[in-house]
Amino acid sequence: MTVPTTGRRERKKAATRQKIADTALRLFLEHGYDAVGIRDVAAEADVAVTTLFSHFASKEALVFERDDDFEQRLTRAVTDRAPDEPLIPALRREIHALVRHCVADDAAPIWRMIVGSPALREYEESMRLRHAQSLAEALIAAPGLSRSATACRTIARFVIDAYALAREAADPQAAVDEIFEMIEAAWKVAGQTPAGPRNGRSGAGV
Image (cartoon, rainbow, N blue to C red; front, side, top):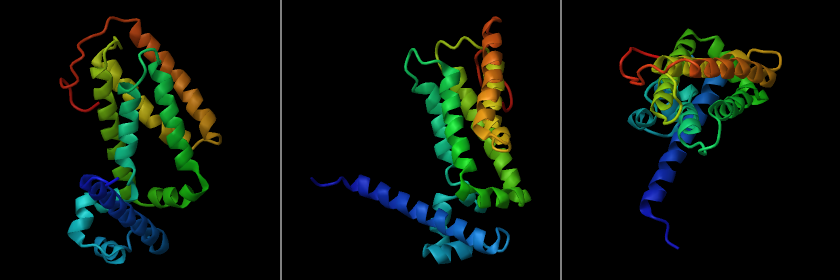
């Protein structure tokens, strides 16, 4: 059967993106994040600088190449749940998966690099804020949750911060469970008070 052209094109784009990200990470770990420039990455990956920027908006984004995937997985945990599936366990499952990825042995050098770079730490913080915003909007828009916009924003921030706290714990997976017990309790309390306006656009940030 003939594979559609659009399918081949998308696979080629994905392969190019992955090649750029893998090349950048290897160079960063070998030579240090600050010592490697965008042109170095493009040359090593054998792509034009413009091609690199068509896949990654900044040098920092090269380190967090799964940023969009994580954000989408969290929002889908809200939007694609089965009608009878509770919300908080669905979110906890995704945070568990993220923490497993972050604390794997091969991820340790990457996190040491991030911790040692002010630019990467700042980018990660802005990334978490963006994820919290997207998750809050998904919660606010989801039917049947009966929580105020403020409650949705608050829980979204708690969920996004959970993995940052858990990955620093002695037992990261146990820490996720402990944190989510508190998140679930907060979510239940929010459901016991009348829900205010669910318009997620009324305030700044999350």
